[in-house]
Image (tube, rainbow, N blue to C red; front, top):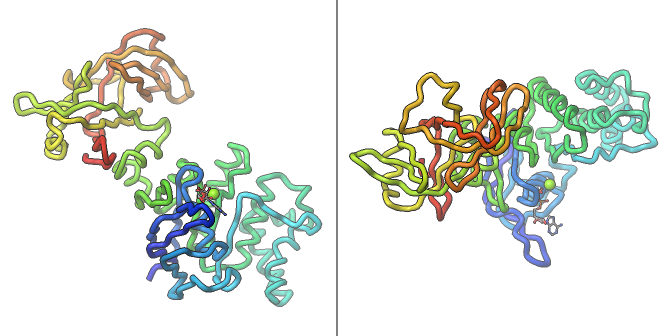
Length: 368
Ligand SMILES: Nc1ncnc2c1ncn2[C@@H]1O[C@H](COP(=O)(O)OP(=O)(O)O)[C@@H](O)[C@H]1O
Ligand SMILES: [Mg+2]
């Protein structure tokens, strides 16, 4: 049985009847690290807070272990939650901050000391135990907040954007630390973030949310390679996927995606799935890294090659983002660090048609 199970869980806030969470079902297995990711306001925090018991469930069931917890108060759910704001007690030392929850629960002194010392060692903050929060950096404070959760030895850790207050560099560092922490503790973790990079790098599985609804739950590679709809395709990946509306055209047994000013050939593998769209509108999607500058490829199939105008060149160090005008659309290509075409120059681009996506223009569901 899953460690945490949400079954058709909804949340409607009154008054105004905001449907924040809409029939969310999700099973989190023991020791799994699941990331709930989506734009601001999509219902991530509400979902997590319902698991924690901080929000009432409007309908549906939540299980932790084999117990239905809908009516169980937060303190009896055996969870520990870490928030974006660390909310450390300013007058207490690091040790006291970490010990506080255990003292409240009446743990014996020796046990508290052991647990705090162990957690401090895991987090690399043993030398800070006698300091007050104001004597710590943001990253150190966040570690103390983590420590406060770790000492509890909960069945499930819940994280709500715990790294959002840190600067970019520290965030990347703490991301690695969290990965290590999960490996070391081997505990079940549910992590909420709006940052798709954080989701991709942390999660065993990620659940992409939009407008209160879980769009897709899968391992990061599957979400990236096989997004189920346009929303997921556009949300995951940076720079985001390029979308171009057009039609499917058939000529001599071959199928093409036809934008009007250019066309590219659909692969034989993809053909059966786009054929229902013959002569009809379809949405074409291609990630920036699947567009190559013809100058740098060994073989450029003419039927997948298009000419575009360079509008902006953004050198990123190891790679370059080219903003291009193709037909009536702008698109971004991610090319090698030494590729520096000139602005307003026309260049030939090769599309890797084995990596492209097609979406229904109305439902936005992936068709191929
Ligand atoms: N206490 C509340 N009362 C009314 N509406 C709320 C409340 N909390 C959140 N909401 C609304 O519910 C939706 C989801 O919010 P939230 O779960 O905080 O999103 P996220 O964490 O993904 O940014 C938003 O539209 C938000 O405005
Ligand atoms: Mg939130």
